[in-house]
Length: 302
Image (cartoon, rainbow, N blue to C red):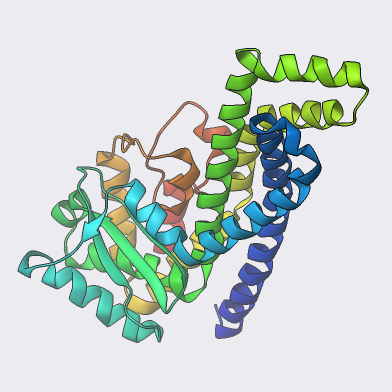
């Protein structure tokens, strides 16, 4: 795989990030408009500029601080002390090989073997690994997984994936609040009042309700739409960095045999992880990762 393909992937990821921010912003805008209308019916006239302002602020906050939100959501802690010296050295060495600044390194207390990278660019990136990964993998296997996450940073997957995590998470929260309000009669009562007044607000409320119902589904579809080629590319990039594809293949094999898929992390951030942290009966339909068997097969064919 030539270097041009990596640069093409970086450019494609930048375009995908812009498209994602625009499309999800439209959904968030409609949900925020309904939310503001419910909280302050007398401010319906200014709901439009308020919604635009709130979404703009949220997108900016997601861009600047989305990685902190993600790390906090999994209770990640800095990898400090002599215990994690080898991990920090591995991250630094592979970062130098990839030509990027070393990312900050974090630890997640979990027996599951997993890892993820997050941030807005290579200069503001972080890698988090589980204690289970550190305990179960040997040196070459750990290097393969870290190389995969470093590759996500180098290929600039992290901005796209972090935006997905934070933005669709808000959409799900707003949807839940709106549906609960409707369930307990709040929206239904106001909708009846507005229908009697003949205002356009009742139509907007109905559209918002439809979006509130569909947003959780859209969340999974957006995650599903994240190309599996990103994971395959990161696997190939890891093999390029470590010069040893068998290390990553062996790590995936251990993970496939030992992981139970019970990390209990939010579905909004599951696509960030090295392998799916939550197993469910719907994985075959809405899987955000390629099958581990296929990833192993491709690595061993290199």
